[in-house]
Image (cartoon, rainbow, N blue to C red; front, side, top):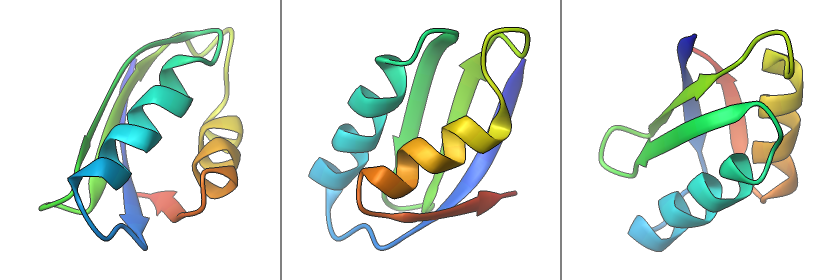
Length: 69
């Protein structure tokens, strides 16, 4: 499953890389692609292993604000 999430608080492309790395460490996340320019991330994940809420919580723990698109 793929879903997009809006991200607030990024200051540069390194912020996007940080979010990608943190999300891809989660069991069930296959791929994450965060765009600084679009202020969003697209996450490919297994919904049987991980929930939207855990994805949002992980982004928040990384230091950014996130919401479902």
